[in-house]
Amino acid sequence: MKIVVTGASGYLGGRLCHALLREGHTVRALVRPTSDLSFLPPRTAAGADGAAFEIVYGDVTDYSSLLPAFSGCHAIFHAAAMVEPWLPDPSKFFSVNVGGLENVLRAVTETKTVEKVMYTSSFFALGPTDGHVADETQVHHEKFFCTEYEKSKVVADKIALRAASEGFPIVAVYPGVIYGPGKVTAGNIVARLIIERFNGRLPGYIGSGSDKYSFCHIDDVVEGHIAAMNKGQPGERYLLTGENASFKHVFDIAAIITDTSRPKFNVPLWLIEAYGWVSVLFSRIVGTLPLISPPTVRVLRHQWAYSCEKAKLELDYNPRSLKEGLEEVLPWLKNLGLIKY
Image 1 (cartoon, rainbow, N blue to C red):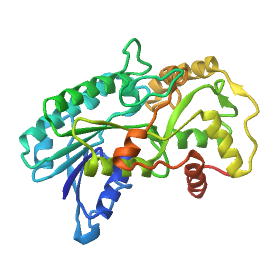
Image 2 (image 1 turned 180 degrees about the vertical axis):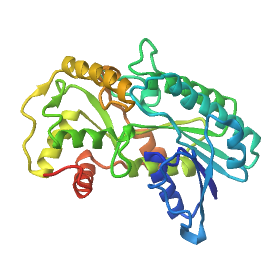
Image 3 (image 1 turned 30 degrees about the vertical axis):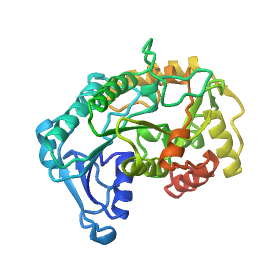
Image 4 (image 1 turned 60 degrees about the vertical axis):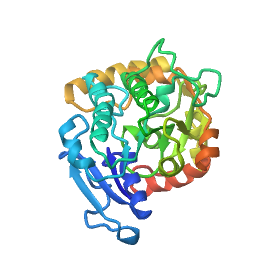
């Protein structure tokens, strides 16, 4: 099968390209001319049964570039997204995450060969779960949004679900907090915080430890995407999440695995927020994006716990435990020289 992956140079997209190629699919990676291609298969790569890998240049915000990219393809993995807690120009969240999806759907309509679209949404599209564990039936309350990214994914989710209700062959998948080896981007926040922790720049736990997220290993999420292509029903939503835990639990497991000391105190969120405001100011001056920003702290004030039972039942999704995943991540970061223990 010939498959297009948008956002192929990203953390998830790159890993997805490798997996699809191994399974014998011909993979066409849609990337921008400025994209870092170092985590993609080489252009001469060949997978099982002679499957080929090719790179095409385009942008989901440029509709005209999508038509030749989608031509002759049978399935689309739309993984392109602007994934950041904060940007100096928040309109980029909507031009990429909302406008990009609209362009993809429009281009697929013009491309008669496409049979299925797998749309990578986000747990943020379902909203916070303060005090309970949510499933795919939850609808975002829209009373508030912690980040502009969250708001853009809620808007995009409505577009995807409306398209599905009109008969468009789209399957929406909702990863949790993705972690694992690969690109250390904003989408790999677990790796970034572990680096900060082991390098002494994050000396304590984040907040009170009452936060809760659904952590999922990158390779499990990739397999979940492929299962959505093979088994997922158009119009359905599938949470590709994992173990629900706090970042305190992440740091505790990391300490046990590495035989190092646990943090001895908690850094209050008001202090982290103050640091976030300073980081944003510094970011505006030097042009680099901050690790911590006020929207990040707003996220930390809520819980984001989800059940992936539907994906387990219908897609045979099988997420590993957080401990098992961190047992891979920590040596990987050490081998890269990013942490020491």
